[in-house]
Image (cartoon, rainbow, N blue to C red; front, side, top):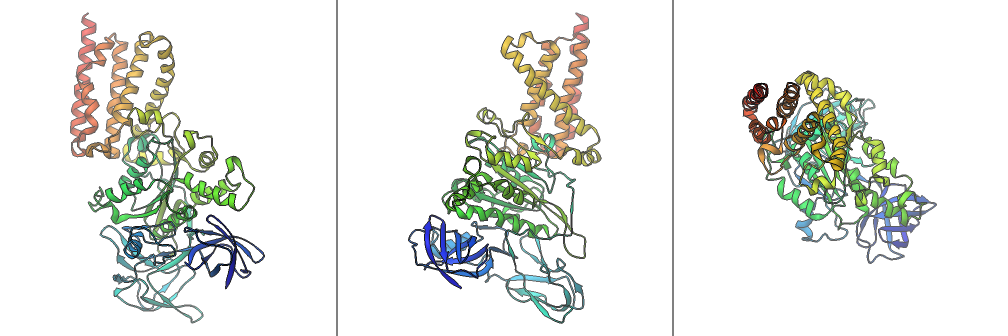
Amino acid sequence: MSGRITKVSGPLVVAEGLADANVSDVVRVGSHQLIGEILNMTGDRASIQVYEETSGLGPGAEVVTTGMPMSVELGPGMLDNIYDGIQRPLPEMRAISGDCITRGISVPALNREKVWDFVPVARVGDKLVAGDVLGTVQETSAILHKIMVPYRVSGEVVSIEAGSFHVDDIVAKLRDDRGNIHELSMVQRWPVRIPRPYTRKYVPSRPMNSGQRIIDTLFPIAKGGTAAVPGPFGSGKTVVQHQLAKWSDVDIVIYIGCGERGNEMTDVLMEFPELKDPRNGEPLMKRTVLIANTSDMPVAAREASIYTGITIAEYFRDMGYDVAVLADSTSRWAEALREMSGRLEEMPGEEGYPAYLASRLSQFYERAGVVECLGKDTRRGSVTAIGAVSPPGGDISEPVSQATMRIVKVFWALDSSLAYARHFPAINWLTSYSLYLDTLTPWYTEQFGEAYMQNRTRAMHILQEESELQEIVRLVGQDALSPADRLTMETAKSIREDFLQQNAFVDEDAYSTYRKQYRLMNMVLLFDSLSRDALAKGADMNKLFAIPSREKVGRAKMIVEDLVDAEYDAIEEQMKSEIEEVIAGGEDA
């Protein structure tokens, strides 16, 4: 079915004669066959957002509807790949059209020429339901791809073959209860705006280990949780996202570069193939899907890129994997919503954003979670959604930040003053929070005993006390503080510089295991407790602060993981003996 364009306004095209079309249908626009999606219908008039440059389009050009909603192809070949916002593979598009993407180019998301080795899991005669695993494909050296029975398909396996196949070759046939034969290949299609189904959803109860001490110890996120990383320009949002993508203990990472600068995406492309996964030694790209819709690419496709990423994540979740979706940034996605809303002449909400901004954000973040997957075997998978927010001028009172804060349960607030002081990650410990502490405490207690969370609580208390004491110091100077308050300031400084601050360019410091984090925090707080006892016994405050082991505490985070326990034990013993000497010296005096 086709219609004719009556109006072109940037990425918005209005066409008539599409009475049989539906909202969310994909259409082909003009002689270049540009890809678009119907946003709303009024009679036979359709408002279409076009995901490509619309220059040259005019009234009278033909619009053809495909009758299908905006969907992604799911199957082997997605990992170690880079797509644009509507899942067109950029490397293959470059091979066809060169460095500049040609308008209207159509390339399948999954390579139809590549051959995959399919290993059956099911057998002839097995009765399967949606979500059951038919067979496996070793997609990369790091990930085993499970070929599953599509949604709403079930029946008895009539035939299934092992061997080498293209993704669209028939690998199995199922006969349903009505006697109909379903031919199954290794590829599925799924509408991006509809969440993939699951059997049951669980409360997230295990932390996602990022290797970043301020995140893992002070403001942890659970696997299957949601988090936001807001901050002004230059505060390190992208760097935090990169660190999470590199070091998080998830099986698969979906990184969505949504509206950010192209050079940031280039950094990812240059770094990830060279970086090794700390768990298996393989290149990180072997478990990564990149979706690039940078600021110089069509603005309408930003809106689709978020849904494309989360749908791919849900597919891998359904295999039983833990997946992290990193969206950088949701502010640029919201700006795309605002532009399209303005061109549709909808009533604007606060700061020009559409009134449905908060509900759209919710729809994205609510697709995260820990679920029991479809199928008769009890697989559990998770999707963790982490979105960067780029408020203008760092003002988090603007609508996108506020709507995000009402939805997510972890808030890592980046601070430009920390970034300018070269304190990275520049997460402000006074304005950040995590609402997963209660559900994660049993896990921490089981692994490390009650001391882990007690240390966390004590460290936060010291940092908050330091903030209050800073007000007094600014008024009357540090000399006016009591020895106990001076010790609080000294311990807080050690927590900030020796524990929270990390150097991503030093291998020993870029990633910290939970064990190392626990021992390092314990060492800093041991100095505090021993010094308080010493001050109570009349020890000299200045001598306590100058003991040689303090310098070793400052360098302790650089100790390699294998030597942590032995080296930290030695530093703690040295600290105890030096403080005892200071106490003895005070008693002699």
